[in-house]
Amino acid sequence: MTSLAKLLEAALFASARPIPFDELSALDPDASPAALRAALDEVREHYDVEGHGVELVEIGEGWQILTRAEYTEAIERAQLAARPQRLSAAALESLA
Image (cartoon, rainbow, N blue to C red; front, side):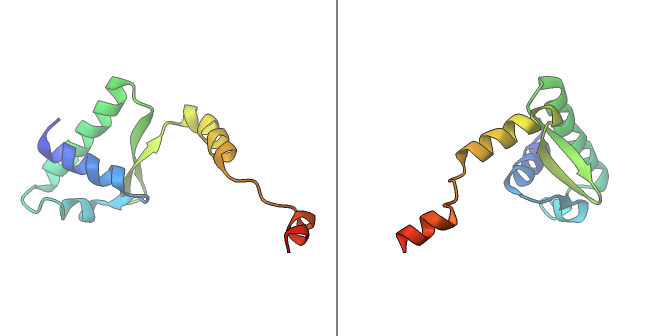
């Protein structure tokens, strides 16, 4: 991948929200809009061709790296299993 594609990938990976194109362009003010689009396409293709569990998706006016749809259910199950269970009202009363 080009250095611009790697920079965009790192920024997108670190963000919990879609990043608008204008914010991505601020990462490298010397890059043209066409170069940014090409770099985004490069990242998207990298995830598609290599068969990764994540993908680069354009959401509204922004871009975000997301888990592929086919893994959503398994990820949700794992996250639920890792959450601490809440105490019942009776258990909380006993602790008080």
